[in-house]
Length: 182
Image 1 (tube, rainbow, N blue to C red):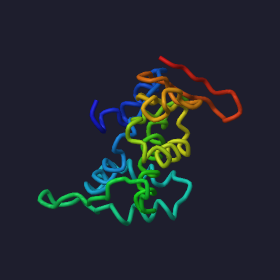
Image 2 (cartoon, one colour; image 1 turned 135 degrees about the horizontal axis):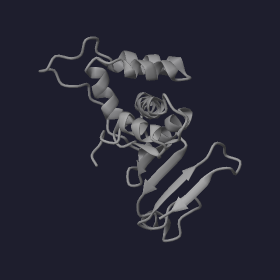
Image 3 (cartoon, rainbow, N blue to C red; image 1 turned 180 degrees about the vertical axis):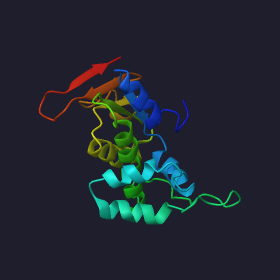
Image 4 (tube, rainbow, N blue to C red; image 1 turned 90 degrees about the vertical axis):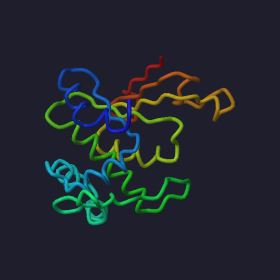
């Protein structure tokens, strides 16, 4: 699947049917920049921003990227820097917000869990992505990748086996979570 395919609408629909709806975290910051550049025509992004617990951060991101009425067709979207190990605060906040909004919107209208899928090979965004998703109440984190390439063959606790998929979920960090490997 490409970036933006497994979005909040699909995850919400799947979760409403009682299955695990999963949001793809891949390039969510770029997708949010484009949604805001289009003027957020349906108002869903604004709703997600309003739910964010740190409103000063939300206001900074909104002011930076929202284009009232949407950008003109011949005007490019605002660009962001590439992620690195030393991301700017602005880029980290955008990453946190984008993951929060996507998961929060996917969780609306039902009580079933929603998960987030991270690409193992795009590691520099894992922490801010997870933080945003956790703030929104993501119940599961899914990741696929070759952990052996980064751990010398024996991955740490919580890292999937080489080439495998591992899902983690639960309501708290005190042992009532679930883990499954494939």
